[in-house]
Length: 380
Image 1 (cartoon, rainbow, N blue to C red):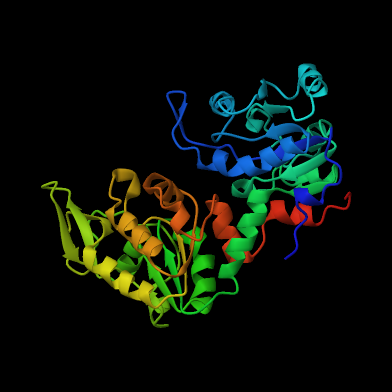
Image 2: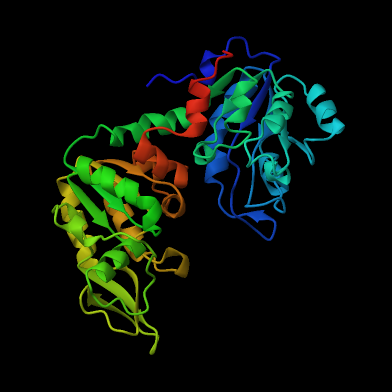
């Protein structure tokens, strides 16, 4: 699919570029914990700077208006000069943008200080568009949301995609027309949101391995004991999917006994009433390694265990095995991408997505509202 990128913009010199990025990074005690999404946006920023555009960066952070992008400004200012506008609705915001030199950059405060952002308000989109001559969306991780800075704004400015989104589309599209044998790995939780993905890749992939809370859901639906394990709430039957012969479930699991607080490895059908399943076991990892040896493409989204609780051995072991394999590898965003970053093995994988929900939606539908809005923009 040919997508309109920033390379298609003629004569960027002096142009005001409204650049939507995803700087929604984890922050603790005022410090950024993980910078992957910022770092992956840098090629687009640097290209626009080199072309002497004037850059107005839009982003959100956190789930509401209380979070601030100030720590992101501090991080960016270690390598480049970036201004900051505390309120993009003020007259001062226009003064700052008007004063930007060629190659200058300013970051506006958290878009969610204005509730119209999440309402996909045309009024807010028109205000944001008034700061620029062209619009560039390079925020893949929010492009599944119809928000004012993602969708509505394309009605007011010639619109293009940045390098990060173009790269996401290029690599994730490999899963839609895959090499075979193709192994699809699905972990994490929320079966109600992941069921479309499951159904789609049951048709496309040769094997589908299910881990995380999703595996607990299968065990529970099969009538097996899952003890105190996390289980999703859903209103559909999972066991009929097993009859298709493509699904692989963990053969052994790591459990924590809630009574004695002991951690042990058990067969999937030997979990006790006081046990909590927290990870996949070593036998399961060996099975997956054998599967990888004959796989040409592996796509993975979601951790295999209770990652937030520190049970990440299964996820780490599988990531290392994939990195060492010859298979083309596409790793979904969210927690899985964070582990990749911590291990420093990104260079050994074909592609690591920056998206969470956006990655799931693109894999399920082959399109996203934010990308479609740019593709259909009539102002170019």
